[in-house]
Image (cartoon, rainbow, N blue to C red; front, side, top):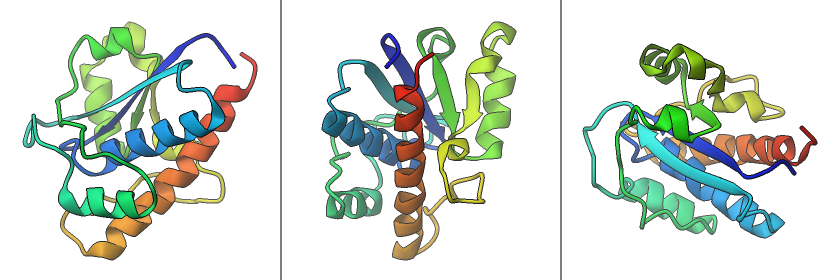
Length: 159
């Protein structure tokens, strides 16, 4: 395991995908005994829901799988995030493009798609479940769990 690492997950409003990713990875790190080595957070590209907890549907679906995300609060990506985080993971290409525009040139190497870490998935983007039914939240969590497993494995590899 490398020295302390910091990771930021990013989606649109920071109420579905990115807080779910934060909760899933936080749980995986805790189970692996690595919670002190990795700082994680989440943010949105837009401030539609700033200060709000995650979507109730995301909370319920996450809780069914043992992830507690209800205490999280939505926030917008801040300029300081590009300095503070080692890795900034976008949930889809639209978020990645926005982050690439916002990031100072010196920090663009930190930007990646989260699903690059998910083994066994051909999809590169986590679909937004917000306007769909419960199956969208289940698919979101399936994809995030796969991405978190791959990310955890990458964090464990020597630098």
